[in-house]
Image (cartoon, rainbow, N blue to C red):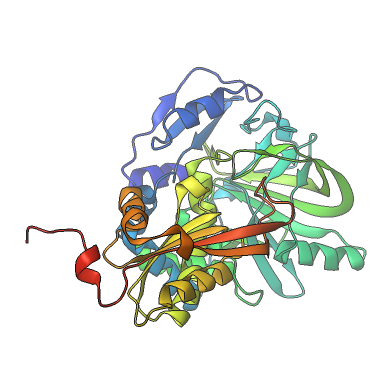
Length: 423
């Protein structure tokens, strides 16, 4: 059983909530937001078990992957550049229970905020195939009936597959997986080329972590999905459109209502004693799983401009999406500016980036602010007006003003800018 085995591997002692919890109350979010570092296990959310804050810190993710938190990015970058084959086995654990007699509203799926349009699946990974191509990706899904959900599709790979299927007069067959390990979650959250199979990236991560490939199994609908997740919901994205939202997205603000595709669920598969994984909208776990897979992309892009690039971090204060920090060692003056422009190219949604020297720990906000305070003057700020912005940024009207801060030391004057040491 995926979630329970994850807790064992991570030596995680979750906060256990025994009293029954109403899925339409704010009780789930109140508890998850109270201490985001603590994993919370609900034994009776709408009568079923559910878990939140499972991977809500870099330390937790690093513990699962068996690396230091500072090395997660390199771990991800290697998996993205060197995908590995997965293994297909005969039966997934979730095949122990298969039913076509169900009501989605009976599952432990909560409404996170009072003004949400409904109860939402937030940690669901959708698997789809079309014309020999597979896509594995995160999407929020709002319950709208016994066997129906609205799904938010942005114009990326799954959207492309759905549009192609719709043009052919067909529904797009999908499997929704809940309860994946970090290898599957991080791969699904990555922005990869259309030709790359996310399961092969997940397999590379899993080999590096556990010494074994990602194991997949065919569901009743024929799609391959991870063999160890807790739930698999099989269905179809149809040509029908329904209202989706409002929903609190990564910035902690409400996203507006849109007309979005409908998913019809045909059957539910799950392990014995399953645990439904939840992702608190606008919480730290949401930040990390969405933002961390962007850090290797930014790193590679900056390294092309400044060879001695050391680290990249999308900051929690910027929702791990809109603000970032990059550390470099300059070869020449102007490398700080080049790093800024390359970072914006590597992650176009970012609206502010701070570039620091290699002696600054990008994971320490105090050190980063110290570098800005002692190595930067405002008249050297790089301002890029009228750039394409993130649709998740409530302050943007489609374009944004990007800000780059070069908080690096002037070459040849490092002695005046280094922090004093007793060594």
